[in-house]
Image (cartoon, rainbow, N blue to C red; front, side):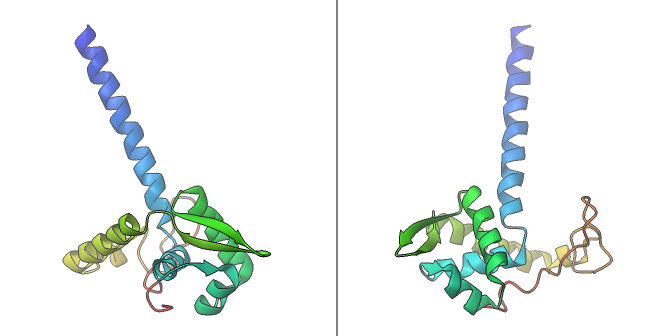
Length: 141
């Protein structure tokens, strides 16, 4: 009986770990957030700098920075009346992004053909929202 409880306990912890990992990858799931992370890999940026570099609205950049901060991927510090953003764990974040590029190269970008998450505009996410093109993150750099 105790063996079953231990096994169930391990399975529950592993399941919880997968949920947390999926939450982390959700933080990387938007092309604008990826572009922001790439820019922050170059160094600290203010929101106004990111809006200028990426051609995005201030509200959009702020929304994505809040998401990335909530995920623990970026942090900010006050500088005058502005906030300056940086990667919380630059080496680890860059390693994840490099691994993703390597995996995409190995799969021939097959994920772009995925009927749920691919670049085809007719694909619909399970939430009911149309999928967004994924190939734009590096273009804005």
